[in-house]
Image 1 (cartoon, rainbow, N blue to C red):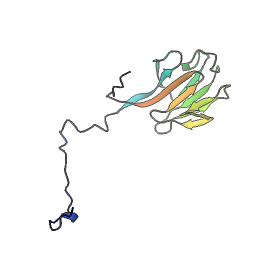
Image 2 (image 1 turned 90 degrees about the vertical axis):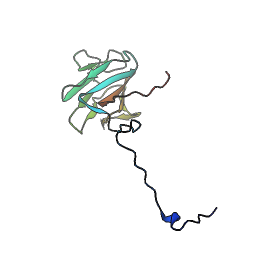
Image 3 (image 1 turned 120 degrees about the horizontal axis):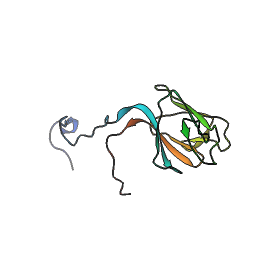
Image 4 (image 1 turned 45 degrees about the horizontal axis):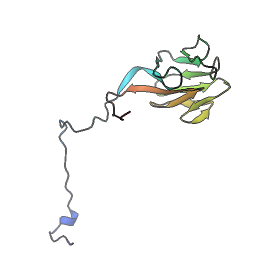
Length: 139
């Protein structure tokens, strides 16, 4: 089918959605948390969230750690997190079972919002923002 209107092939129509329209998704709706958090999503104590309010966070089976993970698959002094704006990292401290970040074993790795950290049988999610809405999954 051929377009018979002169200049129609070269024309572009721009539609603008009003900014007050309720259907516009709020892509910047995540609020930055005052302190990052580490939430257990799999393993013992699922649902527990730790507020990481110091620049250095220790993780391990010893109760003196900032994040105490009481399970034999976790070394007494397993890992350490270094938290500074834009440069959050996790470092393995020579643990027996290793520290895993987003599915890869690491000695040291950068952390971003939503990074998965696995230590022993604990799978945890590192968060720096708080999403204000949830997507229903039916679960």
